[in-house]
Length: 127
Image (tube, rainbow, N blue to C red; front, side):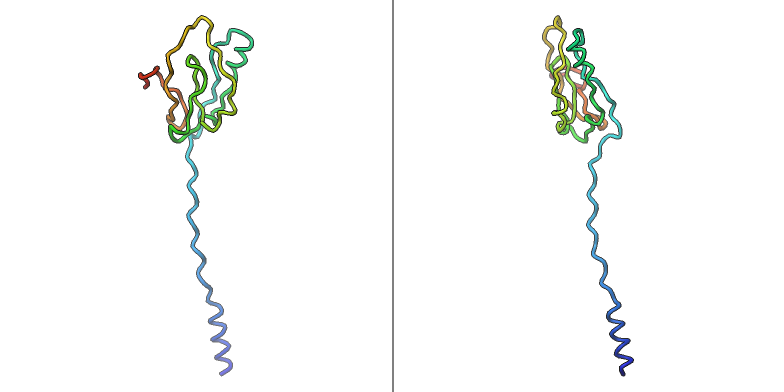
């Protein structure tokens, strides 16, 4: 009888509880594989303005998933689009041509194919 009791105890102790269910892994935010690097742009006719115009804009700073991720920065005549969370990296303001006059307001920044861009057009004629 003892022998049967030992087998019964071993049999009960070896049945393990099922492993806890794992929570699904969070889905990472999808961004464009590659956005092209660019330059700040604007008028580059003076040494100071040329330095600002040649400031690189990293493609990674333009990656987006929705229009809400993007922001337009820079003056009306030389706007550029970056991710809204990267505005601290681009404090330089592009120069405008001294004889250029006023420019109409550019289009708002949008997310196209995973990259923040300023679409063609001005004001209400954005494409």
